[in-house]
Image (cartoon, rainbow, N blue to C red; front, side, top):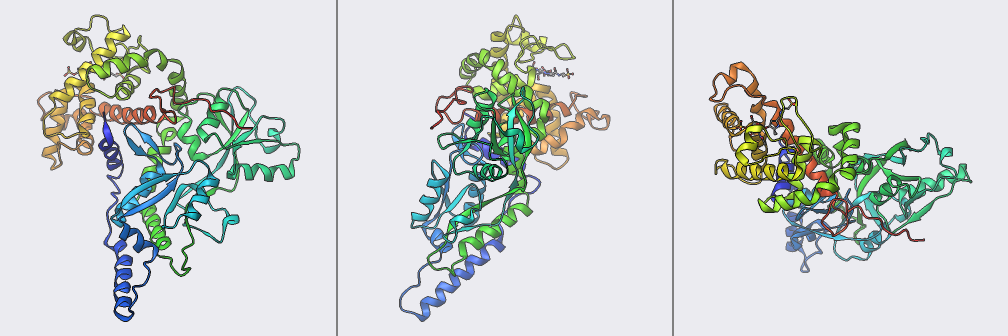
Length: 496
Ligand code: BLG
């Protein structure tokens, strides 16, 4: 129920510092193209064929061809998400057209579909340039560099160099750059053997290492960064050089001089790097380790496997009872106690949802250590906060305000909103209030407030963490249709 708008809000927050603005400059090439068309029309009776970019504008839609994988494009809650999807959406917005997504099952099929398609489209699927496909495919400039990485099970001896992989059960994606790299290694180490599969995705390969079904796999560093939080036993053995350039690809236009689409793509990607969009997407999708640290990511992965299954049905039941998204409620539970019903804070607050004694009394919770009562109480309190916030705070930011109120109480939050307004900022904007909240612990500021001192930095971390956990919990439902955290991480069959 946190709906598409919520995801946009997350991105909007991330772009706060380097907001991605429509630039007049970017429209200039189009104006020239249109002016050119106009001129041609005046001098020749037959209208000239539109160039690729003009065709996209005329159609009113940009079509991208991608793969349905967590590091490219996937369903998040009720919306589409993914690094490639978000980047392509920004490009479509800049062109002033809508975005349509087509998917291919394998890398091979993706190239095939791109080459047979008549209309101009972009392949945006974490691709690396493959010279063997030239001259029909054009690649954009690089938008991200990633390293191919060798992954092993943390309980096994750590392989440190290619020869350590001899005799291991190795599985990688068919037609992938990783299969090519292994083939190259085989030339120096003929004893090295490996299998490939086109019925799995990188996330499946990582899970298979985690469960000990295979010893080794190779994925790109961005994929490992995204998935380390789901699998407690996967570990980086070593990276292979050189780094790979991820690029968008398009079919060579029939008229070879037509570089309109490639030029537009290249200047868009350049601008995206310079203005921080790429960094924001990297932070959102691949930033778990940076934010949570390796220990934090590893603990999350363990708790997801070991604790979550016991509480999932309670989160679902009571989230539904109070009209919340269960993954949102579960994310609060993780932030509060790491899903430990016996948890206790330094200040004596207790239980899975960390209710204070006073709040528990108000909610009618008799035993804070009972997970059912704690989760139900937490859900009820969150719903109350959502209800009681001023009407002027719109969804989806209302969720972040409700979380802050859960953590420091409505009174202190109101104080922070008043200080925000006094500072000339917007008291209904989470980014603005977030920047002011820490003032509640500085005398100069809290002395002017109604409710006085509060540890205003705490709700800032609290909300940031929960938003990340919420994303991670939502993404882990991939790729299965069954809406369950662990159900999503299913074992696909290996094709022989
Ligand atoms: C919250 C209460 C609010 C209360 C505030 O404290 O607890 N929320 C819940 O019990 C769910 O009701 O607001 S008030 O009623 O308006 O006063 C302020 O007192 C809990 C917080 C406190 C916090 N955890 C849920 O987020 C906590 O334990 N902080 C201490 C952390 S540490 O141990 O010192 O690191």
